[in-house]
Length: 127
Image 1: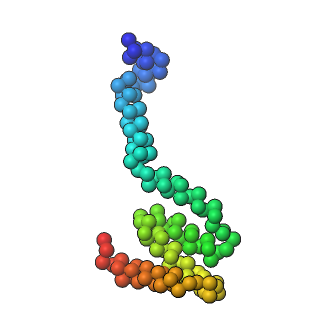
Image 2: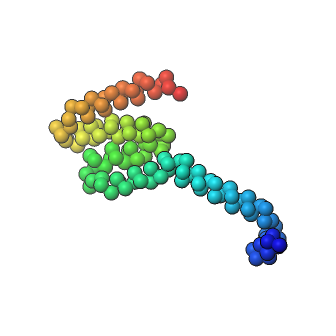
Image 3: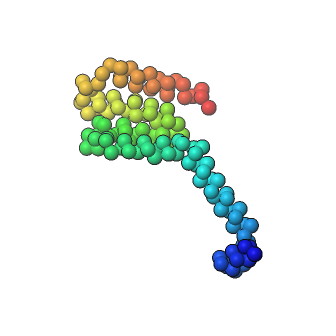
């Protein structure tokens, strides 16, 4: 009874499908969306991180270039750590090239050098 009603209402025979196929497709879509929302919080946290982009000083290239490299490095490097390291390495380099090296604190330089060393020496043996 309900099957016939649904077939007539949605014209399923003309579209060469059945109620069973449509229910299976709907359930699959629902479960996929539920998985993305509840099991994959990384997707949502990535979207939430984009709010911070509005606070970047886009007119100061010594600030925006490293931030841009982080945003590009994370998805293209397939690693959050690699993307962040790219920004940490680029920040003191860009500051020094712009003549603003005196603004840098020594821990920033040390961390950048350590990350650069890890990239140069450690990346060949990994993977």
